[in-house]
Picture 1: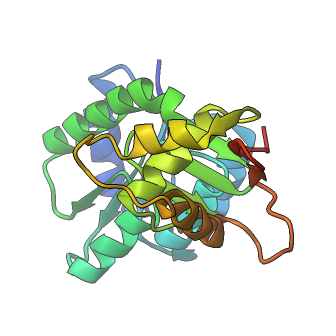
Picture 2: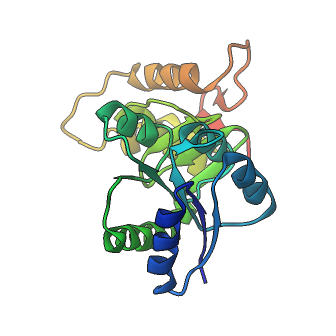
Length: 225
């Protein structure tokens, strides 16, 4: 049985959501404040959160940012505000879906089911390292809950290094796997440039990189397991 946390201060809507989810035989907990939600998330394991943005004691997006620092569980945001900027902000901060009120409970139930199915298939593609969360299925990357914008080349490079963490990946291997079009000319410095840009986005400003280390004469390694 899946356990779902519903954080919604509209008691009528909250009851309607629970009735819709009961048909799927889900277990659920209903609360109406962020303070309660923080306590429950710290003490229990949930498979999905349905989270209203406008709550009596704060903004749901702030709570979402905290969740994303340590968890990749699906979060569906609810809001009465259909401003495009709010929707974009919620999604960029890590929301998996976004529903504007009023909405059909049947549609909500379908979206809950879809997110739970997706979570099952993508769990192996989510990597948590220190303050980083790398979601390789969606190619979304976070540091302390903040989105890291990576180019396609940087995404491929990071994925290869993390998949081989602790092992050295040869420069030639990286070039072959990143620039797969054999007809494409690749400048000999292209890999070095990509490594530098990726380090700039991931590493703190320090003399020696912590994560992406150079193995001189061979290639690179993701050093943190």
